[in-house]
Every structure is written in C-alpha cells, then in structure tokens.
Image 1 (spheres, rainbow, N blue to C red):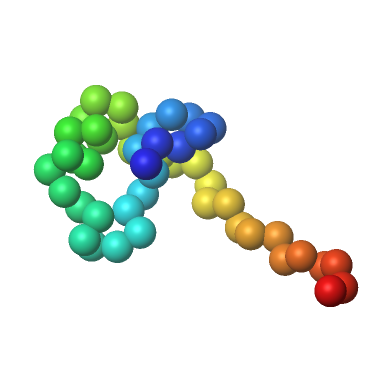
Image 2: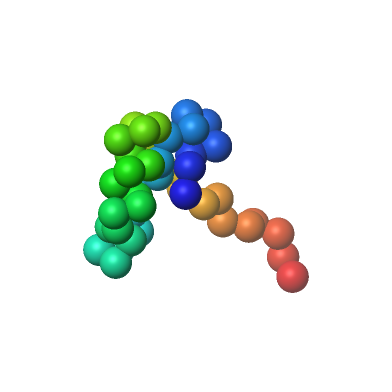
Length: 46
C-alpha cells in the first residue's frame, strides 16, 4: 500500500479501497503524488 519511491500511501484502485485504516495511514504518512508507472510492453517474441 505504500509507494516504494516516496514511502507514502498510494492512490486507491477502487472505491472499496477507501477504508478507515487507509485514512489513518494517509494522515500519518501522506498521500503519494508520484507519477503513475506505465507498464512497458514486452517486445520479445515468444
């Protein structure tokens, strides 16, 4: 749940992820504002 770069709470993937525990973590650690990582497609042939 914590960003490996900034050590803050990553944005939720869905509305179900918004919980009281998540809110506590955000108040303690802050919310991640790092740019989202874009998966790089695998260009190798299989």
